[in-house]
Every structure is written in structure tokens, then in C-alpha cells.
Amino acid sequence: MRSEISAHHAPRHGREIQRYARESGYHYLSTVVPPPGKPNPLTHIRARATELGAEVIIAFDLAHVDNQPHLFCDLGYQLETVCPHLVWTPSVPPAAKGAAAL
Image 1 (cartoon, rainbow, N blue to C red):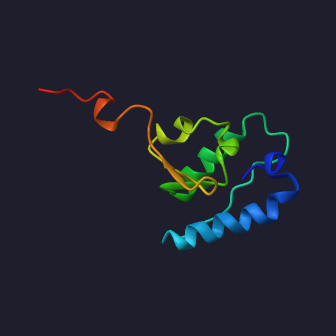
Image 2 (cartoon, one colour; image 1 turned 90 degrees about the vertical axis):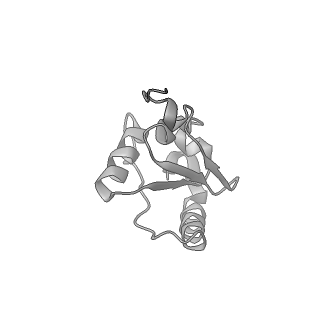
Image 3 (cartoon, rainbow, N blue to C red; image 1 turned 90 degrees about the horizontal axis):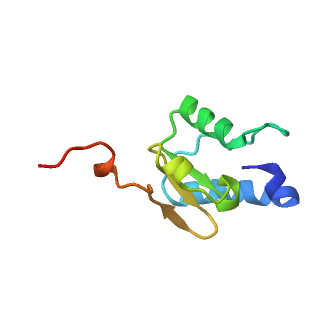
């Protein structure tokens, strides 16, 4: 969750992300909030997700990933948003990523 985007809604957004995770049957690990002024907050989020061994990243909305879900999906993470309630897919189908077809 990016505090510069959520602003005064951050506490509610955090609660809604946790609720969404529970209701979706996920084991909630952590809400990652990049430090203020971080030059590339998405890199921080991806690094933290890797450290935690996360497979699914839940963002409140696409603004938190700079409206670019491929920055997570194309790296193998499942990205889901609370608002709207969507599961985002990779921009390149997994079979097309260097796999040869006969």
C-alpha cells in the first residue's frame, strides 16, 4: 500500500486489504508500505514480496501499482485488487514466454 496514494484513507485501505485476503482464503503475511520518498516504490514492494515468499499481491486499486499490473503479473505474481475486485493476468501468456511449440 502506498501512503502517498491512499493518504488519509490508508487505515481503511489496509483493513480492506486484510479483509479481502481473509475472505479469499489467503494466509495474510503483511501490508507492505514503501518508505516515504522511495524513488521506486514498486521495486520495494516486489523485493519485499520476494523476501516474504508471497505468491499473491493484493493492492487496494491499480493506482498503487501505477496502473501497470504487468509489472507484477509478468514476474509471476498473482495481482488482485480490492477495488475493483479483479484478478489481473500477465500481459504475455505464460506459454509464450520463451516456450517452443511443436
